[in-house]
Length: 111
Length: 112
Image (cartoon, rainbow over all chains, first blue to last red):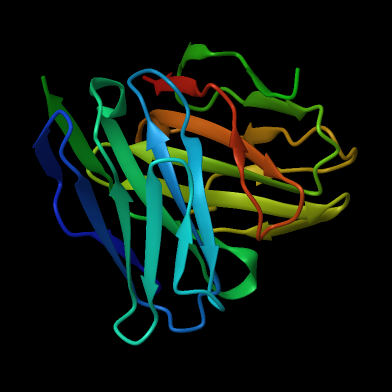
């Protein structure tokens, strides 16, 4: 079946450094991708999305890159802050409006 | 305030006792969805709905039912809960499927 996977379950970065979280998906027909942030005890919170007709999209301090050739997307967080510490999920819309989520990368920001 | 609400937030029940988890959104969204979150497995989609009276199975629909009689509500029904349905459940909604999903606060269900 379809799947979405994250490359690293945990990531630690120094405050002020840039963070990169990677994600791979299996279905070449996936056409919409989202990154979510989940803090402890809360529901996932939207960060940024990208459609398959784009390679890159930027938000405030965040950039998502999509490489459809190798079915890979990444989330880059610039100047990482302690408030960025959370679990990050990528999700892909597969066939039939169904969504598949990765297992999450836990980001820890070291002050 | 735009939001997705779920009730109850916490529920402990026994095997076989039917239960319903309610989900409501006030954003006039067409797409609604239920997910369960388990350690090491991430979020898995149970059911989703493209609009009123239109529902489809997600990745893990066994043991669950849903209905979408009104646009704002999307209840999750467990007719005969079993311990393997112990999990953290999230409801989410979006304007259409390929748009930002707003998640509710979650319902932690324990089935003994």
